[in-house]
Length: 238
Image (cartoon, rainbow, N blue to C red; front, side, top):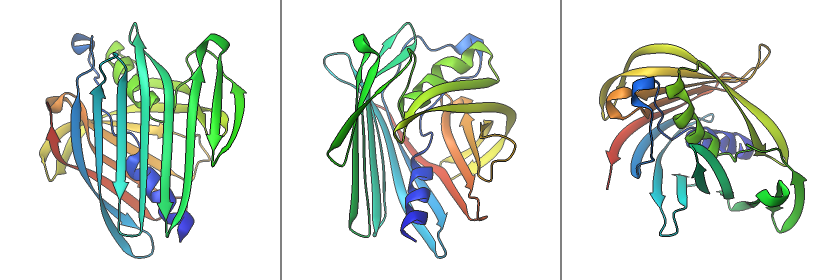
């Protein structure tokens, strides 16, 4: 049950940023936002929780993307601090904190770009890993999707520092379809996480052009057939 709830909470936080998909609407700058979501999770019993995704800019010019999901027995908080260089996300620090049934796990990744290295401090046990240029963290790649799709790409791939190793995250644009949410019905762009032909997990994300291509729905099927769904509830902008 502990592992199952942790996986579901991670799904709830997955891909909460907004993206664009038309060359005519290529973003030249990021805009702060705060989006609220509601979740329906199958963990043997039905579990409901709220998720919040927020993007803000600090006085020093750095951007911070935060994502939280909370339930009575569990919660996860993530944050990514990054800069932009010619529409390329440059991660500076990533933090991950989760608690399930009173058990905690914390991770902090600090990116050292002059030496192309990341220091990963997991539960106060730091170690280092060499990384290639363009490596992203587990929130920063979501912002990079937003900046890349306007160029007409239907397949996207990113190196991501994840779980103590360098992994490749792949995505494919499938088309558009109407989506009903508590915030309304939207004609949304559907994107699939590509884990390979033999993958037992499936993840789909829908982005609404009329909301500046913000995510309005996420749906994931786990390897055991259990489902998780995230729907847009409310959008707040400064």
